[in-house]
Amino acid sequence: MARALLRSGLVSETPRVDEERLFSQLMELAEVREPEQPGWTRRTFSEPYRRSRQLVRELMEEAGLGVQVDVAGNLLGRLPGAQAGLPQIAIGSHTDTVAGGGRFDGMAGVLGAIELVRVLRAAGQGLRHPLLVVDFLGEEPNRFGLSCLGSRAVSGALEPHLGLRDGAGETLGEALSAFGARPRELGSALWEPDRLLGYLELHIEQGRRLEEAGVPLGVVTAICGVERAEVRLTGRADHAGTTPMGRRRDALAGAAELVLGLERLAAEAPGGVPGVGTVGRLEVLPGASNVVPGWSRLWAELRSPEPSWLERAAAGLEAEARRVGAERELEVELEWISREAPVRCHEGLRRLLRDAISELGQSQLELESWAGHDAALVARLCPAAMLFVPSRGGRSHCPEEWTEPAQVALGVEALLAAVLALDRAGEV
Ligand SMILES: [Zn+2]
Image (cartoon, rainbow, N blue to C red; front, side, top):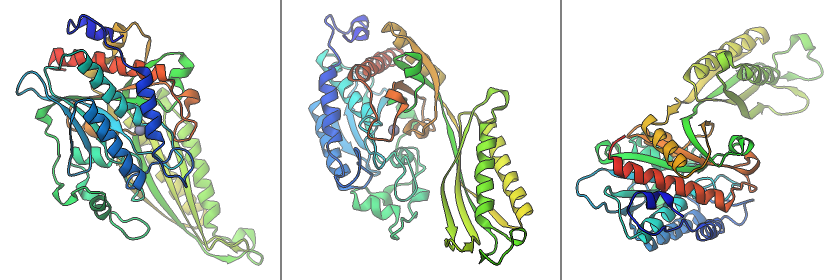
């Protein structure tokens, strides 16, 4: 029931988004996983990931796409446009997962895009613009601590990171080569902004706002910025029995204060601007029950779709670190590892998505994304926007991650309507 196709005048009969076909392919892809890991794990550079991309490649070819792998390892399926010389419309997402991940995060966007192509071709009518279906390499953070490998490469931002090393000393560049990519050929952006009309990404929400509102589709306003800091606290290791409480320089107690300080300042939302802060990792030395901790290290993360919140929280964390250091006689070093600014989704593409959803007669919500996405990197090159479908219970990055087959199919319908509108308009 691709009503948008009917309305566009391209077809007289309505080809359908095949909900069952799409869903069975999602389940088939999920089965290609790391058997020793929990859930539906398929991490970047793993053998199952390599095999799964062969499957995605075959699905692209069966759908009639001309398939290529670029130097960064992105899987690209091309559908030529009817009119020569027009820029391409890009759609897609990723198919890698976190450890213990689910079956929809990323996959819904890639397999949904391939289903969209099948529906278009069943209608017997192509687009004016070339269509590019992308399965970006490695969107989730990997053992090198970097996320969005493929989308970084297309926007020219991967090359500076090729020297990153994993725990075993291998570099990211070496891992990419072993996976069949050609990192030596990376440099400036792989995609030319002039050759792109826009990028649209269908994704699961990974939160609970759509479900709680009882709304099937969400248009993303902004993708949150993420800032990560490493904080090292140095005190003095001492005997835990003979050192009186007032004479200690306890690096773990200082870290604990900092963890709670971050929790407090992240909960503040001046002017209604929201953000979140997390300490997800902590190390303590020497790590013995009878020794006052002399050294600790923690990793703090801040997220918000609003630059002003990030600025305030980052300054707050630095101030808190200085205060803890001074009060507890600890040496505190704070180093920002990465500071990714929030990205606003393109207003013209958002309007297109909102209109497409209205055209389908569906309700919608505008919402921020609190997770990072490939679209944030692609937005450096060309207009980019995202469409969300609900996640049951807001669960994601876990085996329970779930979106109803009909909800995924409706997402593809809306994406199709938006692609058709973009193709007609030729500009945003
Ligand atoms: Zn994702």
